[in-house]
Image (tube, rainbow, N blue to C red; front, side, top):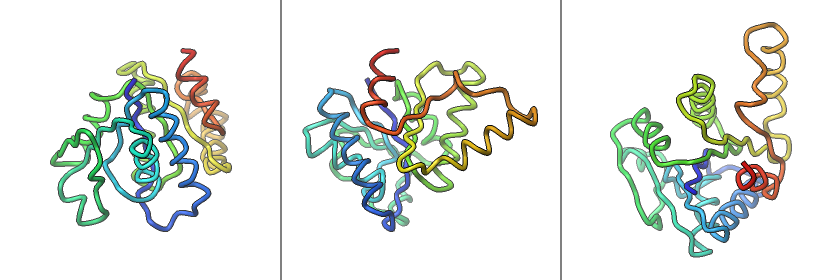
Length: 177
């Protein structure tokens, strides 16, 4: 299975988060899956990729060449797809992925998350989407989504995405669907 991983590339992230991303990458490799990610070599992306590569796993990095001006790109990917824009990048994620894991991140991660959730809500994809809520990172977002449902702006998203607080829970969802 090709598992798309969304997460921050920031180099300022507390190691309690990047350690979880590394362990997730390790599990992806050991279970024989392929990581699809934004190609970054730092932050959550880099930690997950390092976990994959340290355990002889496969990965597909996807990024515009100009992204290297903002953060280092991973050189250990089995395949690296260069694109010209962030929209093209997101389209390539969809073309190359069978499931999605959203880890802690910033504005770019939120953009990727809400786009993939929208695609699923519109029945344009049917892949599993899992929010990896490490140390309650997404609790406030879930509160906001609950309020949107409560006020009628959004239908309850239970069937659109799942939440997990552990790597075991992620793979229970992925392997039992």
